[in-house]
Image 1 (tube, rainbow, N blue to C red):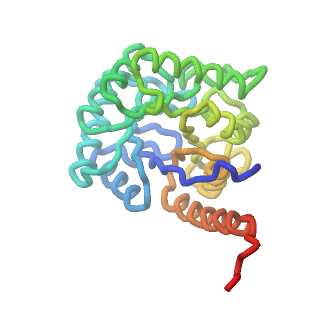
Image 2 (cartoon, helix red, strand yellow):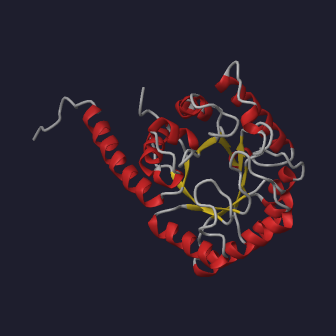
Image 3 (cartoon, rainbow, N blue to C red):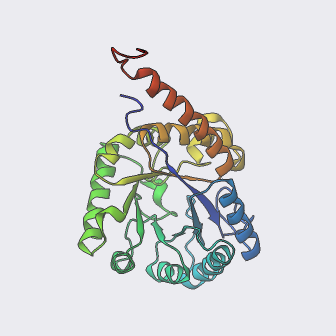
Length: 286
């Protein structure tokens, strides 16, 4: 029944320290700008900051580990200098970058390749950090050339289960693993809503589920909004749907708008639960 899995998801605020990200490329490419943006997202209600130094938009070129590390580590250090208790995630597929970020104080690794680097799982096992495993085919440069699925949800689940096995086999604790079906990564327009709708099936695997729909191209196509930064309303709609279906983490650009909408949804849900509760035979008795 709709709402059965309703709970309070964590909000993961996005900090892109890149010149070419699809939504806000270049806006926070400097260390000071990125740190200020991260602190603002924390003030708006972000539970986790996801700091990335390499764009994963469709068609994006790869950058070297050194460039990526030089972008993200100073931002992690700057945020933690101002907010020592902040929870930082590093958005990287390179174990060497993840190691440097963890050394700087990050506590999560968000790997869009789902362990494409064979050193990533052993690293995360040794550091006992949270590990997000995402579904993707190919690379950001090639992924949209391979979007055919005979059984979309089943195939995504099969791949993610294989990645979980790889992580656990390397020593990562199962409770540290978070699954991301990879909206917008080797997916067609119709695939993305279907994967949001599949959150209960993904959660049934026994792991937390992260949904990252924020400002993505499918939202623009569904709402006829071509400019990514103007897709706030559609992004909030996707976040609310994912939260209602049980998503544990929502990766978003617009933290304040999403937090506000979730607060209203939560109040309505609690009122619905209260109204649905059976009335005791002695209710109201003196």
